[in-house]
Image (tube, rainbow, N blue to C red):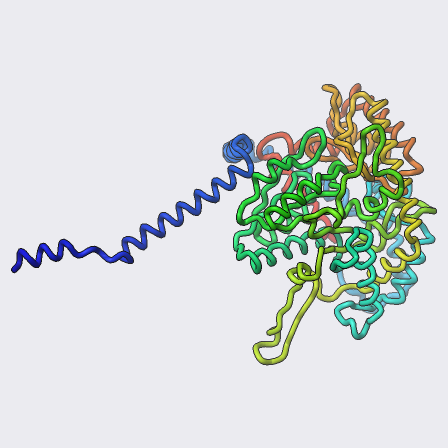
Amino acid sequence: MSTIRTRNQALVKPPLLSFDNAKTLLFISVVLTRVIKIQRHLRARGTVASVRELYTWVAQHIISLFMRIPSMAAKVETEMNKAKLDIENQLVPKGADVVRHLSLPAKGKSLEWILSQMEVMDGELPGHSNWRNGKISGAVYHGGDEFENVIVQAYQRYCVSNPLHPSIFPAVRKMEAEIVAMCLKLYNNPNGAGTMTSGGTESIIMAVKTYRDWARAVKGITEPEMVIPSTAHAAFDKGAAYLKIKIHTIPVDPVTRRVDIKRVKRAINANTIMLVGSAINFPDGNQDDITALGKLASYYKIGLHVDCCLGSFIMPYLARAGLADGEDGKYKLLPFDFRVPGVTSISCDTHKASLESFRTWAWTHILPGTSVIMYRDAALRKHQYYVNPHWSGPNKGGVYASPSLSGSRPGALIAGTWAVMHYIGDEGYLESCRSIVSTTRTIANAISESIPELYVLGSPPASVVAFASKHPKVNILEVGDAMAQRGWHLNALSPPAVHIACTRLTVSMVDTFIADLKDAVNQAKTTPSGKGTMVALYGLGQSSAVGPSMVGQLAETFLDSLYKA
């Protein structure tokens, strides 16, 4: 009997759901998940880029260890402290005669006193750029006294309004809806949907949030990823950091400056929620191939956001201004708006659109900042909303709902935007587009034809032109610093280049800009100083594997200085 019992026990199979089997399955699941993630990462970036990333990571750690040597650490700290102090001195007025208002006055002050103190503060920091002379890149979008008066009148009428309370301020609600409607029509989607935001960054973050929530609700994606060009605005990285979304950054073609479509396709996987294209991008003013991106978005059933924050009220007018076909094979406009199949959202800055004065100085500005985020339909927009029906606790009837990040918002900004958009009108924007873009192309042509040391990046169709050096003895950052010596406030880029965003201020200064640029190139070639701001800061970022982290520390110092009273 014992022999039979032993034989029967040997024939009994162990349970399939044993603890040991569960551990094995869990281990296999974890390993498989990691392998899939690594495979997707390698597929998106490619072998060469992945090896480069690994090399950079190793180099960062090695250099960081070397910089911990006491003598080296002390030297680095000394130099960094000097750079930080320079940044602070450029932003914070100092001296015995500087009055600081660090606490509330015992009694209220008169309007005359307040205005006098504002005038004093305007002159406390010597050497700051005077935007009125027109030697700036973007930054200020002012339409002159005529338009300023329109803003002031509208702002004053609605200075205490708050769109959070539409029943109290019905006119502000109506104006906001009409601004969105006007932008939707301008971008050829009159039956679409949208909201206003505080600026381009918020519009972009709202789009990212919308696709994240849409993908979670419709596709069940809990580890979202997005694919963006390397020239996309940093607001996409910011939104991804806030919302915990993985980003795949795809390089652009070095000649066309358009994102590599094959690489974009390779980066798409089951967790991809959206693609991004620019029309135009901030660094060099070129546009991505939105049609090709739209085909990918349609095929994979994912979102496609087109960033038109910088293109705003320029891009939609290029065709009517007779500029869409470019000239001599350059500057041709590609399709970019809702007429492109696959485009599901577009961001447009109205604070870079509402003062494109056709009579006076500037490009575009309302009170900073206002922007519009547009969607192909209202169903997609719902994923942007935040709604909490249990704010006051269950069964207590409390509800909180807002369309964007902010709760309370300044209705006066909406009123100012609405007022100026009506004041300028369609013809005003058309003429402004024509003059600004013609100025931009004049600069680009002058660089290509009469400054052999430089070349234009890509074929910019609108209002931004970037240029870099092709001469071994010309450092383009030296050129930028030489332009700063001549009063120009331009933007440095990385990899090394310089750009100017043209406004109405630039139109009357175009000949001066070209002449100064030629002189600056000659100066950079013959007598480079090596001490300018662009050379120091952007050169540091390119200096080693730890250069970007050191620049990051200086950026933090800049932000800290903004709040030093």
